[in-house]
Length: 79
Image (cartoon, rainbow, N blue to C red; front, top):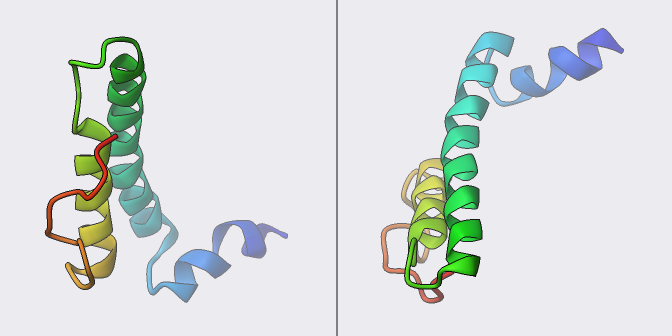
C-alpha cells in the first residue's frame, strides 16, 4: 500500500518522490491563484479577465513541452 501511494507513480514518470512533490506543487500554486482570479472574475467581470485561461495555457505548454495546438497561442475562449 505504501509503495502504491508514494513510490509507484513518481517512478512511472521518472521522478523521485521529492522531485514529483516539487513539480506537483509548482502546478498547484498557479492553479490556486487562477482559481481565486476566476472566482473574483465571477463577481466582478471586469477583473482577472484572462487569468484562468492564461494559466491553463501556460501549464499546458509546460506539460506538453510546448507541443500541440494552442500551447503558445492565444486562448480561443477566455474564462
